[in-house]
Image (cartoon, rainbow, N blue to C red; front, side, top):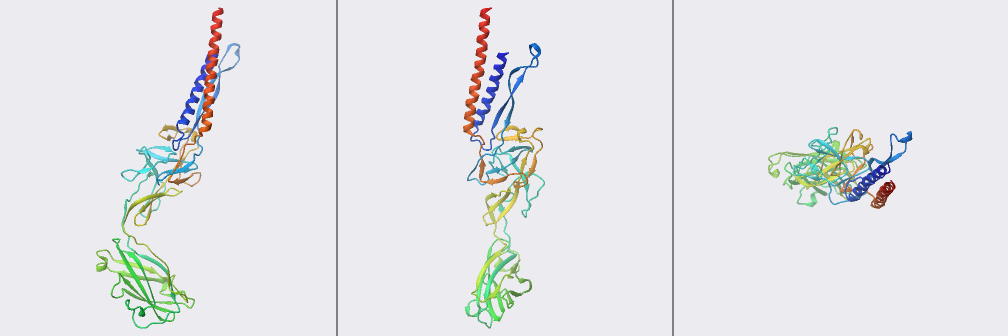
Length: 405
């Protein structure tokens, strides 16, 4: 019996050494989760005299420890770390695996893949950047180039000096004496080419101004508009505070681009007794752009960055969590697969419900505590040696009995 007890102790100690050695070997493995050997004593089913007694030890389970690892930051924007609960979902031709290792990059077809070439899972986005939640798919940067967008909306804010002198006659852009102030801003046509819209203001009476709009410094105004203000300096007309400037297709200044129709919002214009100032001008047109980078928010929103200064939402990373993480089956390559013991995956977006948030440009390190593992290594070695000693002692006793007989 003592031989079997000692042998069970040797086997258990050997498995413990293997677990500890594996933990130590993966100290620097991104997303690695340590394990521990859990022991249970073994009782003989029947012994002489009908009494039960301890007959050795066994490894009852090798339990995975899913404590959070430390997060370190990298220079790769596509590296991701989960801060909290959840696993990345990756697909190998439709077969799902789960991982905490956030090494990701773009493949030749602009799909996000891990370092085994598996596709990162998430929700796609439509052409307007709206997330299409509900159906998981392989995440991809759909547009490597962004087409131009013609300016259709302009918003501006300025103050016209109420103390300005009243002028008579028409505005002549070459004669500063015919206007009180001027401003200009750039817009884009349907081909992405940049054009300049210039506004010249002349005070024609108290609270009344003429504004002439010129497209690309034309010889004559493309639009002449009268605007007026209330006694408190707020805009009175035009109603709605919008001026529409249109340039027809075929105009030589457009060089083949389509018709431009721009609503210029001047509702935030004022006329106060202060110097003329332009506070803000914004427009929604832009030239074509090429992909320059990718950024990922804490909610997993995947945004493509383009050379024209625009961003476009391309999708959203999803995470999976399980009722029993310890029931996941380790597959190597920092991957797990679900099992009956783990339960079915609960899918959600980062930061929602119980899901952790994402850190872009970061990686979660192994959760192995090297100091405690070295102590465990010494304990496992001592345990192995002690069990070997019991076998040696049992052998000596047996030899003594044999010699007596």
